[in-house]
Image (cartoon, rainbow, N blue to C red; front, top):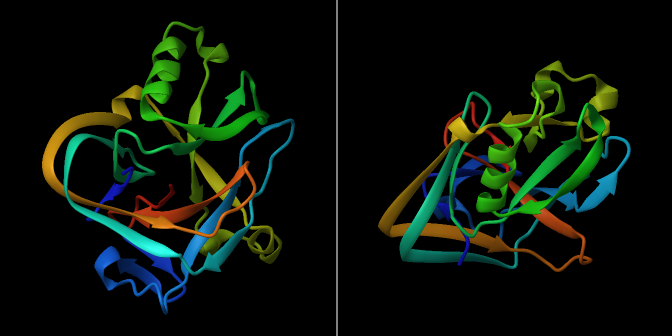
Length: 193
């Protein structure tokens, strides 16, 4: 089961909650509607609050975990957790592709980028919300988000045993759309996964 470690908080309609404090009969989870796409301009995904169908828990997971941690994000997931990323085309942050990648594919993209000239390097960016205190009313209404670039130095692999993990099941969408949850392990590391 792909999942996050249990030390994350999840954003709900009632603020940030640890997974054990979430009541799926009462809590709505803050989600981003992630559209897999090729694009030639910025796409601003919709956000909403949504009641999950289930909260899935495994208390004794054994396997490889990846921690991604830099000044903008901090989370830990199983090695098979698909991460939603934006890979801009070389030299243009307004075009590229948004889709799910497994972490090994992300590492491969970043490894190849090291051999590319600096102004032609592929980038991998995760999604995070802007600080709402600095947005204009227009930007707030347009569900703006920021993209946080990650590098190879931000990714650490560990093998762990008997670790608790969780994920949510949400209502089905079309084949190119999934719901991402907003998580953090500290107040500065908020990210959509």
